[in-house]
Amino acid sequence: MAIIRKRLAAAILLSAAPLANADNLLEVYQKALENDPTLRAAQANYRANVEQENIAFSVLLPQVNASANYTTSESDADNGTTVRSSESDSYGWKVSASQTIFNANQWFNFRSAEFVTAQAEAQFAADQQDLIYRVVEAYLNVLRAVSNLTTARAEEAALQRQYEQTQQRYDVGLIAITDVYEARSTLDGVIANRIQLEGQVAIAFEALEAITGQPEANVAPLVEAFPVNAPEPAAPAAWVSTSLENNLSLKVARATMDSAERSATATSWNHGPTVSLSAEYGQSTSDVELPTASMTDTDGWSATLSARVPLFQGGGTSASSRRAHEQFNVAKERYIGTQRQVTQQARSSYLTAMTGVATVDARQQAIVSAQSSLDATQAGYEVGTRNIVDVLNAQQALYRAQSNYSNARFDYVLSLLALKQVAGSLSPDDINRLNEWLDSENQLNRVDLSSY
Image (cartoon, rainbow, N blue to C red; front, side):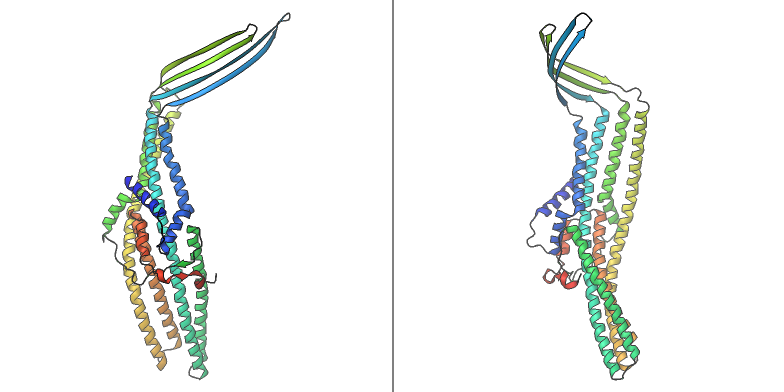
């Protein structure tokens, strides 16, 4: 767990470090560290769970108690001929201490709680990695929505020009009215799509603000030169091996299994003997006023060494032991299931990242092809060999290719982060590296992007 503690310390140091020169993504991450309710709940849960070890250890330490008492009494006894009255007061105090000498059940419960602490540390580290992924995903979703909107606006502007040119051609009798209708219909569809995308930009900003807890007005776009490379090492087996060693969900499952095993061992000792030593010292005073005044002061101490062996508890002890062992079996099977899931996720995430590299290259080439197709179609339309529908389709294909390319780059970034998260290596350094590829000099303003 030393590695996990170092990661926790690194995240805390980053959250406390000044970000005067930070770009937007770092600022967003800083706000999320301070305000994200999911992480804050995880942090509180972590602090609560680590106290379980202290609670379990406390029963192994001396138990000291103090008590005090005061009693007053008054009574009359009437036997028919005489009445006898009595009055008395008594008071005292006592201090007692006890120490467990042998109790295997308590010892193994303490060992079980040690694994609860390890589980809490691994879970909190996993929650911190989840925050990193959620911040980047929400930020890229804003950039994705902005990119789609920018493409839609460019497409709308191009189709607006195409519609105006078509109208002019119709006005001078070069084309039929159907071409104007086709251009207008396509333009109206693009306008409707643009309006919808403006709403999606606002929704993406709202999702980002739900994490940071503060209004977000600007985002920095991803530069065109952002490198799209295959993950290193370029072998799925290596990522599987790393994931099985470092995946935090797997560490949580392993700690849960170990804790359940110690708990089962503890319940097996419920039939065993326990030995304890206790001692007490106290003083008491008895003051009798009636029928005869007297006062008695008493003080003294005592020590007791006791041994206890439970013989029969109605079958409850055996049932508790069987229950604990079955709970261990549950934790063990879940650990095995998590191992298989991590193995599958590591392979799938690696293949997704590799596919993302090829997809970005293919999408980039598709833009070149779509542009060439549009140019050829436009030339054919000018000489009468192609119609307006062909031109409109070619224009839409170009802008669709541009949108697909932009989305492929965002998907690639998220696939790399998902692969690192499975491998347990996702860290704030990944935020820093990604931030270096954001164009902070040309930030995009929410007000300029959407009217919502």
